[in-house]
Amino acid sequence: MDKIKQNSPVLFYFNHSKKWLVKISKKESLHTHIGVIKHSDAIGKEYGSRLVTNKDKYVYLLKPTMYDYVMKIQHGTQIVYPKDIGYIIARAGIESGQKILEIGTGSGSLTSCVASIVKPRGHVYTFDVDENFMKIAEKNIKKAGVSKYVTQHNLDLKTVKKMPLADMDVALIDLGDPWIVIPQVRKMLKGSGSIFAICPTMNQLEKLTMALVENEFTDIESTEHVLRTIEAREGKTRHSFQGIGHTTYLCYARKAFFGRESKEPTKTKTTTKPAKKTAKKTRKKSS
Image 1 (cartoon, rainbow, N blue to C red):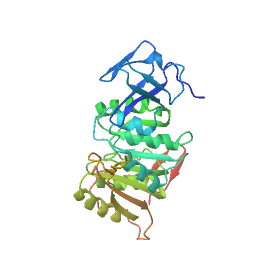
Image 2 (image 1 turned 45 degrees about the vertical axis):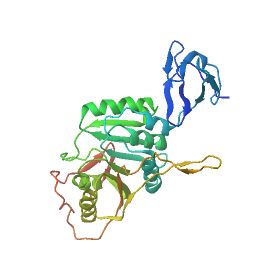
Image 3 (image 1 turned 180 degrees about the vertical axis):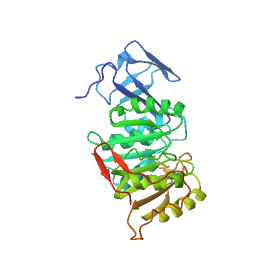
Image 4 (image 1 turned 90 degrees about the vertical axis):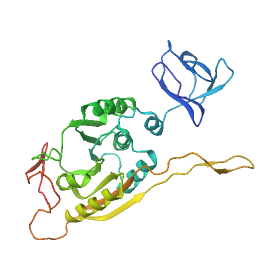
């Protein structure tokens, strides 16, 4: 039986739109429109139990999932939503033990979810240039309990001359101009390694696709994912008036070898020059 104790994470759940994610502290209370919820009343109870507030309202004590953490994180930037994250994980085949490159940490929603999948043997290496956003992401990643499996770097990969990583299984890009880093990403990916880019506009998709072809990627696919919830109630089931519609476009591709003559496919504008690739004790040839 999984019981709640001091410092346990708990989702106080009243309904779909009224829920609070907290870390239990016996001296604290949560004041809400449905009454006061004392943390101490939750200690010793099993997850799934319920409490009664001073206004006679029931609150269920649920164990938070990664979805709950993502939906409750502090937003420094626009987050990647679970409806998109789920497809990214499935399409790219992200699994335990993999090494993941992420360019554009943002608020850390995608970072946290992917880290929860690749742990305990895998790792996420995430890069960003905004220190303020990085601090917010660090807090969110820590709150999700996956800090051990994430390494944050304050580095602009658009301008590096030496690639900091090699033999990555998957690359995730969340930048306004993702096509700029495609040559660098190629150097850091394994053969047949997957790439996913988050693109808010179709113009970005066009430029990105051109860069992917030029840099010898195949299985290129662009998609949009819209989630519509259903209000299922006896005798009056209908589509919900609320929901998450368009959030972003996703572009997927895999690193391949087109058999071109010996020239580095780098027509995409970038300041990066070809360099030897090393990562710890592993060395691989650029292709």
